[in-house]
Image (cartoon, rainbow, N blue to C red; front, top):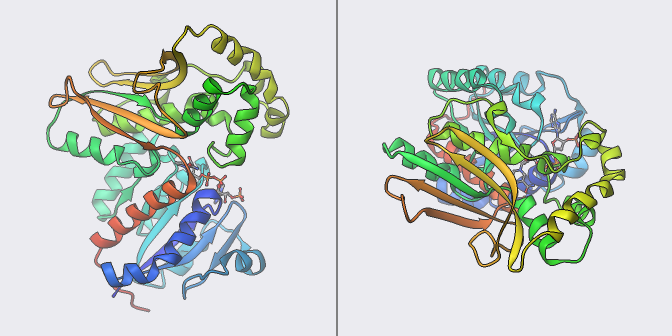
Length: 361
Ligand SMILES: NC(=O)c1ccc[n+]([C@@H]2O[C@H](COP(=O)([O-])OP(=O)(O)OC[C@H]3O[C@@H](n4cnc5c(N)ncnc54)[C@H](OP(=O)(O)O)[C@@H]3O)[C@@H](O)[C@H]2O)c1
């Protein structure tokens, strides 16, 4: 039986749900894949819990009572004692954790991440990570970076690696903004109220400005652009921000206190819609011209984007074979359950392709 040790950074909406899913499916993975998947490390921004037997259903209580202060090498000291396959799971939105990827790879960790930041720092950092992955024969999986659990990245990877010329990828990239604008277009509620409800329900990023500023969608476009072979930096992306300038650098608390001040601008955009139009937040990646754009647009209600419901994501991929009739992927584009399941699917992918056996040195 292959032993896999998981070290999870981030135990919030997505990380916490992932832990529950791993524990619930533990016997299934043993029977189906001959994998003994153990969560041996948990960390939030301040504390860390290590349990080499594998944490169990009482993990929240144990994290509260038995966790210690997190140090930069908390996981490496323990993991170096074992020859198990090691997977670090990044379920944070933290740049600090992304910057640790080279060190994790140096310490022989594979990485599975929902955090888009690591893939959208400089092109140099991106290339450096890929070089180390090849030289150390490790894996980095990040399907949940775009479209939560939807198979967007794998589809683009498969097309690109088979020699297909990609032309464009367009759509509603953000499940959170899909949820917000699907509701805002239909309901007579102030924009800010819908944003706060979306935050409370776990649809938005921990700081909703990451969504509203367009940065989150821009990061997704950049992840896909790099997957399609383009070498680009984040600042090449044309982004329409929905956050008014005075709130862009405010603290999160101050932003939440003053979020109502976004209402007049958004209400004005809603008031000028023509009959049969709705607002949709769109991402556009023009691969041929290397142009990436994030904007809020009025679209026909009966168009594919206009018909979206809930937190649906919607992606159209145009390429040589899909030139006039695009490859369309649509479905729940946000939510902790689908995102955690997407992470778990990546974890199983890594687990099945690694061949190490636990041996206590
Ligand atoms: N929610 C979705 O639908 C969805 C969809 C696709 C992708 N994602 C991605 O999933 C990631 C997590 O989202 P979430 O909704 O679960 O966020 P969340 O509920 O705010 O949880 C974030 C977790 O990360 C921890 N954290 C922050 N900085 C850290 C650090 N430096 N070291 C270790 N842990 C740290 C936080 O710990 P503290 O409590 O100590 O701060 C918290 O446990 C994000 O990158 C997001 O973009 C989410």
